[in-house]
Image 1: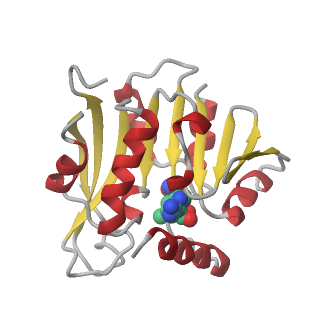
Image 2: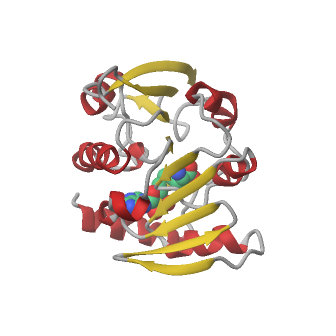
Length: 220
Ligand SMILES: C[S@@+](CC[C@H](N)C(=O)[O-])C[C@H]1O[C@@H](n2cnc3c(N)ncnc32)[C@H](O)[C@@H]1O
C-alpha cells in the first residue's frame, strides 16, 4: 500500500464512522508512563496520526503544548466540536492548521508535514500511529518522524502479535522491528507489557507494549 491508498483507506474509515480505535478517555498507559519522558511543564509534545484522541486533551491539561497531525478533516472538526470550541484555522502549505488554547492540529498527510511547519518539539506520544500503517509505510513513517523532530524522547504504544493471525490494522510491531526503525538513534526501554484481554479483536493473542525511546548519547 502506498501513501495515497493509505490515505484513501483512512478517509473512508472516518466517512463510514469505523473508529473503534477511538477511546472516550485518556489512555491509562499514557497517564501512567508520560512521566518517564521527564518533560517539564510547557514542553511541546507531538501526537502523530492523532485522530480525535482525548489523549491530546489530557496532555494539554497537564500543561503541555500539544501538536497533532491527522489526515481526516472529519476527525479534526469533531475533536474541536465535541468541546464546543471553534478553533482558528490557517493554511499551512499542503496542510491546514487548526488551533485553540494549547492544542493545534495539522489536518493533512503527515508525509507532507515539514520541520519548518511543525517547529521544534520536545517529545512525542505515539499511540496507534506507527501500528496503524502497513509494513511498507511504517519504516518511511519512522524515518519521517525522526526527520521532523530529531530524536526527542518518545512514548510509543505498540501491539505485538502473530501477523498471520490477523490482517491489521492495527499491525504488529515487535521489538526487532522497532530496533530496526529506531535503534540507530534511540535507546528503547520496555516500560510495560500486558496481554490484550480476550485477544486482539477476540481472535488473536497479543501483547500491548509501552516503550520509552530516549536519544542515544551523541545522537541529538
Ligand atoms: C488507529 S487511528 C489512531 C488515532 C489516535 N492516535 C488514537 O489513539 O485514537 C490512526 C489514525 O491515523 C490517521 N492517519 C493514517 N495515515 C495518516 C497519514 N499519512 N497522515 C496523517 N494521519 C494519518 C487515520 O486517519 C487515523 O485517524
